[in-house]
Image (cartoon, helix red, strand yellow):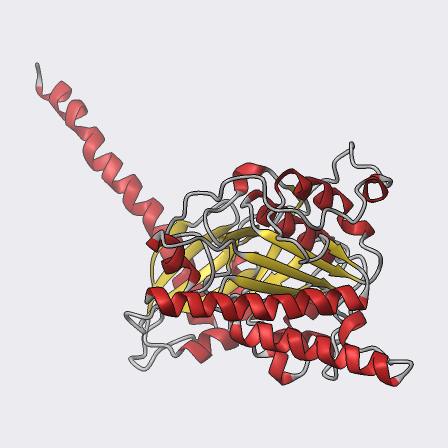
Length: 404
């Protein structure tokens, strides 16, 4: 082998290293020039040091910087940064371990406008799959946040999200009660699904409740149920339904209560004294359950078309810690639910788009089964109330049950 062949043979290594150096230097150079142009410097007089780009998921990429620039300054320059990147910034995040590390999350791809539900999305135990955000899959953990509220204007997809969560609760073999004073037509397919494995004990009411007196009876029974469960926990020496079911001393089925358009129940104008007393008792029972049932595995989810401070007052709102809000043009409605204006920034033309846990989320859509028919409830008598459960209770596990 002559000298020329040896040079050619080993020349690829320095050439490759040079190419890598140039490729890595170009983005650093572009950023240096940009930061210098807006005089974006830290306490040390230096511009941010670019430390690389990382793919978070299909929707987001993250750029990492090291600098001595305060977080507030990064937020102030957000619009300039977006012009530089030619992309919207999803969020700016300062590292909790090192305040000099700044992460810039860039939207690489918009969220889909439609995601059809599939049972493979199901989560274990007391967790419910809600949809997808730019950060990934969104989950409601009812062990952490036992009660919640979903608000959204007509056409926002609020009922569709409630149907999806109810479907998952039924699949988990939970007891489900739906208080719907619009007649319950939106939940007929879920009612039909629930008949396959009803766990409701005698006299606890039908799956769908549209009568105020039946609602009062159910809520009264649930307050008694919650009290008896808590007493059972005390006897066994446990603190919640998860520990009780795991002890194998007994088994309690978690209970899911949905109040669709809660204003129909909480913001009524009674016609007479008796009716006024009944609605006052319903309101009191709902608040009692929300306040005391955290450990007992009884969960309340309220839906609102137009929340108001009169109906959604501080006492009940403080017990509905899991919040979901669809688009509202009025900032006041967004602030009532989320304590901020985030809901006004959602795209109003996309159905099923919500703010969940502070994240813009596209909720899963549960199709209405074709075999469901409008005569189903008429053929089911009282809607499936009464009768003992025909199946054996599932094997208790640490993941099943109510809040810890």
